[in-house]
Length: 127
Image (cartoon, one colour):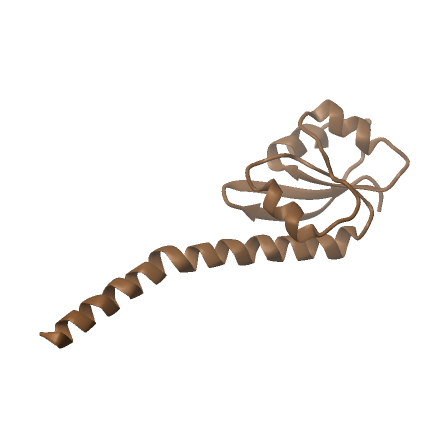
């Protein structure tokens, strides 16, 4: 009887780890990895980001001293990327699609990232 109790507890704990702990750890690792990759590419250059539910987590792992500006519309992003300063943008896929068809704007697609249900595109206005 004691053996069955121990086995039941072991099965329940294994189920808990597989169902709850591993997915949470995987999400943590993916956002940390994205943040480290962004930091290595962007450095201390200007960065704008499309606000989503996962934005705060990404900003935490970027560990930046300079503020990161949020861009929500294609017009706002377009005006930022037209500046002479080298600017990076972590944009949602939808916002990138709106911007890439503008003739007066040259964006260089550097990387793609997925986090939660969001798809991000890292772009720059200069090579």
